[in-house]
Image (cartoon, rainbow, N blue to C red; front, side, top):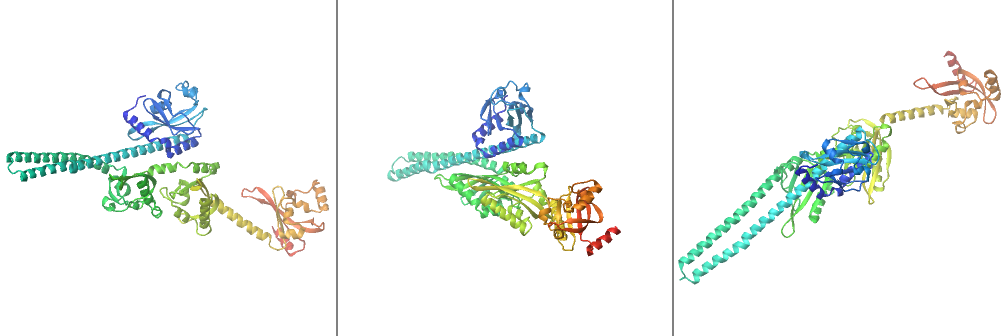
Length: 634
């Protein structure tokens, strides 16, 4: 399959860049392989004769012939191509990649298309056994293909700018040589000739005046011609420089700045005005640090970038930058030092591209594999859980859409660490989150807490906040975790706890009533202080172990057995009664005590019995008389 010269030219430039060493491409492929559940993901670049396989986790092949490539079919179809089983597909079953190493059985690929519709290759995945990807995984593959396209465009743009800058430097050097030629290599001989003419006039007054005049005239004409040649040469160079400068000025996709050696803006183009929001008059003469956040300024990030470019010749950076109106954009920056003929730094060029849209897409797709895996682990049973991630080096905080929704902010909200912490309710919740963040960064200790936040609308809300840290070479590089709205369940839990406390308080009030409750099987689950006094058992000796039938005396068991035919301990259901009934109970010390008790079922909201509760009093007590009267009335 032959392709246009533009595609071949673009691929040649990309191959020179060597994207194999670019971490962002590696991260994308790791994510694609993980999200699609396939062992191999790769980027294939197609020239006329070969497929160049770049950034290929799990794959060993670097170049394959065009005729054996799967990717030609992807380019031809201009859409997602899925081959569930290559051995059952006439197009591929005899392909060497199917019949021999790497034994491809499943394949899926999407075209990589940059601006002007140039198709560079494919983003693809494969497996060594027949397989499939669901609709969500198909969309994921398409989204990442667009992401790869954007990154490749960025790399090509950077390469083109570097070429233009180098070309400009070469033209400037040529212009300097012309100027030097005029001032030293031409002007000096002309001056010598004119001096000789004067000497002849003074020392040899009798020399033929006509010859001297002719010689002087010829020399003057030569001087004029040389000046014209030099002026024309400079004019041509100036015209080219003007054209180049106009081209730079008209570029609006990139902010191109000229800085002096101290970092003050000397000139910039329309792209800088568009991206950063300042006019040239407003910004020229100011330090480029005005584009950085207060946090970055306090941490001397602009100065470090300048220093690195001065020492290394070039410096790159990526992060949030500030526009004139205070809004933020994600900028990718290349700063290049400008040197004079003696190698001294006399200034810098700074090229910035606004990658906010690309960054938002990357963030929305959870570009962090750690965050993705963590969310996957935490989102069992399709529970709606938000995610977050803080880059320690850049101090950039990312919230997923669910996390923003829980906080009550809109989708365009840009969180920062300080305002994120301030969402937590002042006091215990805010102090706790500060403490665990510090411990995670300093010692790598994870957390899982239930805390309160105050939403953007001023509402209190219970959340479950979890966090973990990622270390590299002993230094924390990021912390990340999940964020879940548990307000409803937490409030129910609190109310239940309050009800339980109230119930326990009532149970333990010394009013002469023994209270015991059982589960549906009749095992005691509540045994209050008064019951302990009546029967001599402690709650620990009874709860979870026995039925109230244990306390009945043998005669009562015998009588009940004769009446009901039950020879063992009576079941709790058989002790249910709605009025006081007399029983003889046996205490722990084997003594007997007369008890009057009522047993009634406990029912849930659907009227299903889930247990039983009984109250016991001693006959003749004031409480017994009151209960007897009330139960008779009932």
